[in-house]
Length: 159
View (spheres, one colour):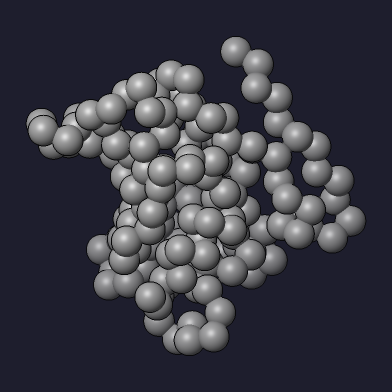
């Protein structure tokens, strides 16, 4: 798996759903057992450029009726590569801003250094809408993902 998808979903998004699996580059889950016919599917979305990804596509799938709803979460909109893009001086509309490419990364994940707190928060909101009662996703940034010299405070779950 050149995208290291299983590592991305297991180690970086750290979604709390016990009934889940990564197949290929896609994550499948049943977030809440009492919503039996519905499943969550998350996959990487590519740009118009081959093997360049700019976000995640979240889908709610009904076992008999098929696709019920889909949402796109942009890496740029959720600050996933903000630190990298700032360090490289990449701005919106330029080259690899808010994206990663899946070529030339044989030893390390192409999305290495991604910040997932914003993505996890958005995924949690989406899952809670479609799967009330599903386990909540921890949305604070892991210490290893923090930038040197920056304190990271947990995000609140207030509604």
